[in-house]
Length: 87
Image 1: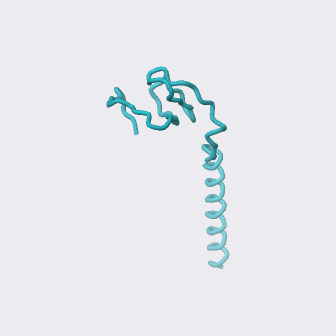
Image 2: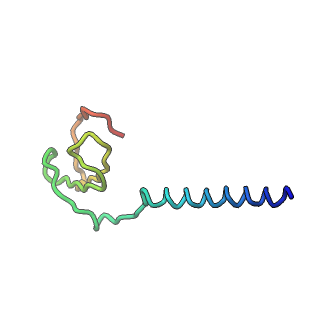
Image 3: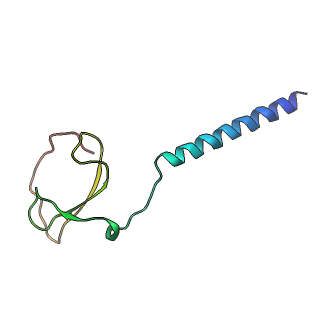
C-alpha cells in the first residue's frame, strides 16, 4: 500500500516541476538576433561614426537596458564615466 502513495507523490512532484518550468519559459524567452536585424541609429553623444541599437529596455528610465554599439575601424572613445551603475 505504501508503493502507490510514493508513486503518487513522485508523479505530483514531476507534474509541478514541469508546470513551473513551462511558466518560467514563457516569462522571458531567449532569442537570437543578427546585427543586420537591429535598428541602428547615430549616437548623438559620441563623435560621428558611432551607431547604437537598443536591444531591450528604455534608455530614458532608471531601469536595466541592453544596447549594442558599432564603431568604424580605428574609432576611439575618450576616457569617460557613467553617472549611474552599469554592468
